[in-house]
Amino acid sequence: MDFILNPWPWYVSGPLITLVMFLLIYEGKNFGMSSNLRTVCSMGGAGAVADFFKFDWKSQRWNLMVVLGAMVGGFLAHTFLTPDQTIDLNPTTIESLRELGFNTPGSQYVPAELYGWDAVLSLKGFLILAIGGLLVGFGARYAGGCTSGHAISGLSNLQWPSLVAVIGFFVGGLIMTHLLLPVIL
Image (cartoon, rainbow, N blue to C red; front, side):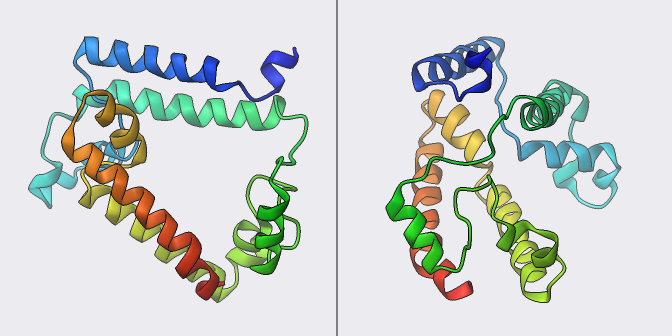
């Protein structure tokens, strides 16, 4: 039972991801989480408003099942297969997070200072989450996909735009982490 309760090492999860990507390429499919937003909007009739949403959304039902599986799997893993909510962080990272105002870094997966109800219901916390979510959604659409679509699927297909997008994601993450987040918090 310890095998399922502990994080899987890279030599198990990496080949499994490779196997899934190989099967998707073999079947002629491109994986991506953010593309499902387009599919859901098309299902809801957004094609009447914008041509972007006019496509055969039924051909993407398999990708919606991936999202459903990720949600159900995440819930099951968090609820039943996570015996300890602490994260083994480097002491330097813990000190850096404390300097940014996080009181208990590593005690849970998401910090209560950003995702707790007190933070979400405050004006500053609400604005951080709303504007952050808007920028992530816009960025994913503007880049033609999110990190999972470009970094996992696009790079495995040797797509040049995906390499550029992944480099942009990493540079943006570094700028956010080291320059913007200390100012925002």
